[in-house]
Length: 127
View 1 (cartoon, helix red, strand yellow):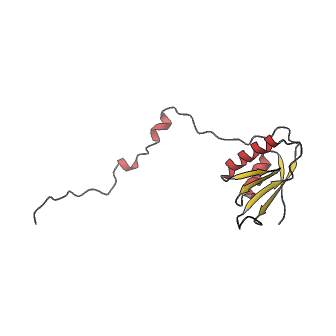
View 2 (cartoon, rainbow, N blue to C red):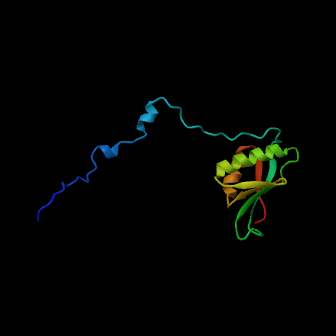
View 3 (spheres, rainbow, N blue to C red):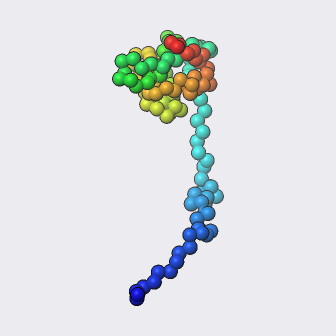
């Protein structure tokens, strides 16, 4: 049988595979990643109560976490900003309907800790 014979290639990996392609970025003087701190909502009365519910009714079987009973002194703009921050921290979608925040999925625990860090008093409601 004649023909070209291929050389065997090593599968040991060698030193090249142990290199981190991003290792040089840290030594290049690039800034560290941003860490977001929980921002308190302006004008918040200390210990403002917020009801957290997990609902499925009327949503085609999809689970939604709703936040309601916000203090009346919070403006619509405050609620929108709070919704945006909660969506980022919980990695989910959501919307604002009137004065009720709706977050997609069952994120009650994460929302509760996030609201407590912002000065709210989260209360699980509705079983």
